[in-house]
Amino acid sequence: MPAQPHHPAEPAADQPPAHPVAAAGQSVESGEIRLQSIEAAIAFLQHDVDSLSQSILSCLRRLQEFDDRFTRIEHELITFQQQPERRDPAAEKPPHY
Image 1 (tube, rainbow, N blue to C red):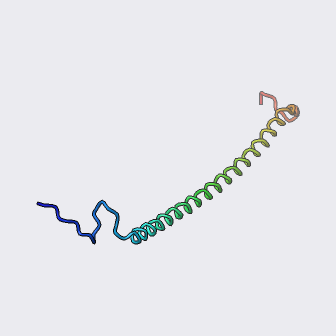
Image 2: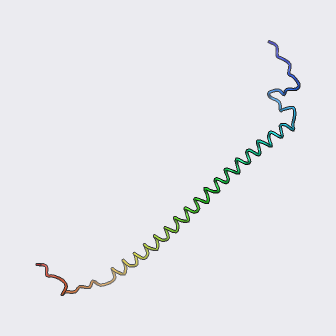
Image 3: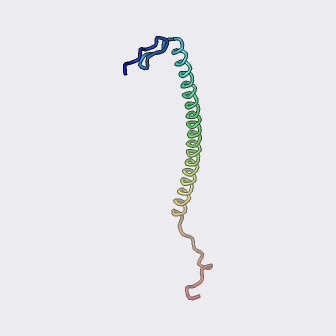
């Protein structure tokens, strides 16, 4: 079957459209959609970053509280170990009772 001649009003499959303005309009529209998609993704990522930052700050505050408590308990333990043992012989019962 012989190849049919190409009609000049229709672009060939491997050639750009005949009207550059239409092609530019399409690319601008798709570019705007792509830009909006990127901006939305950035907004979601920024929200996630802010949320993670708040979580990290909360964990750091709790860690500081635990560190303060540990230091206080450690100090009390050292103080307790350094005190001599005080016994009241009158309050102690003999071992045979």
